[in-house]
Length: 200
Image (cartoon, rainbow, N blue to C red):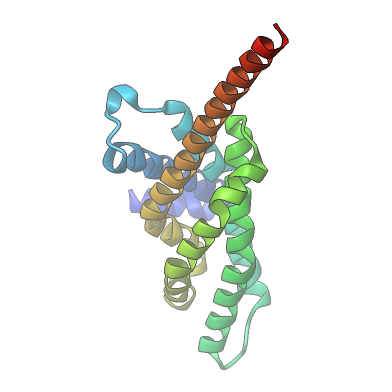
C-alpha cells in the first residue's frame, strides 16, 4: 500500500495529495458526527461529509501542496536550518493559516446556503485561536523532519483530529444560525399579528 502511494505521489503528486486530503477530510467529518456528536448512522449527514470531502480535495489539498513547494523553494537560510524552519512556520501560521481558516468557513457557508459573513463573525476568532494552540508546534516538526513530498500527508494525518474539530465547529455555527433564523421568523409573525389586531 505504501509503495503504491509513493508511486502515485511520484507520478501525479498534486492529484494524489488532493485525493488523500479529500479522503482524510471526509474521515474527520465522520469522526465528528459519529464519535463526538454521536448522531448514529441513521442520522449521519452525508451532505455535510460531502462538503468536507469537496473542500479537502478541491481547495485545501492543492493549495497546501503548492504552498509547501513555495516555502521549500523561496524560504531558505543557508547554513541555518533552524532559522529556515522558524521562518517557514512564521509564514505558514501568519499567512496561510488565517487565510485558509477564512476560506474554509466561507466555503462551508456558501455550500450550506448561509451567510459567509455571519459564519466568520461567529467562528473565525475561535477557530484561529485554537489553531495557534496546535499548529505552530506541528509545523515545526513538519518543516524540520518531514521530506517535502510527505508534508501534506503528515499534515493530513495530524488533521484527522483537527478536521473533526473544524466539522464540529462549522456544524455548531450552522445550527445556531438556523435556530436564530427560526426565532426571528416567529418574532416577525407575532409582531405582524400584533399589528393586525391594532389595526382591527
